[in-house]
Image: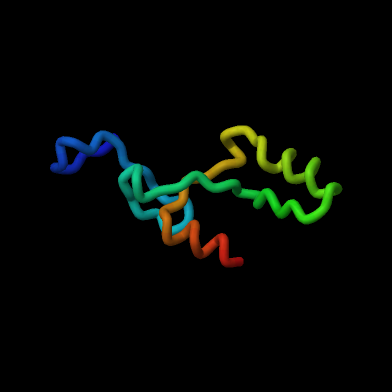
Length: 72
C-alpha cells in the first residue's frame, strides 16, 4: 500500500530486480522463466506450459528492468 503524499495513488510495487518502488503504471509482470518463441509447431506445447504458470512463476519488474531482461 502506498504511504506517500499523493492522495490519488493507492498502491506501489517493488521491482524484483532493482528493488526500487514504483507506481502501478511503471511496472510490468514478467515470467521468471521466459516463454520462448513460436518458430515451429513443436514450440507450441513448451511455450504454453511456460506461459500458463502459477503466481510464483511471475515477478514484478519496473519498465526499465523488464526492457533490460528482454534484451538478453
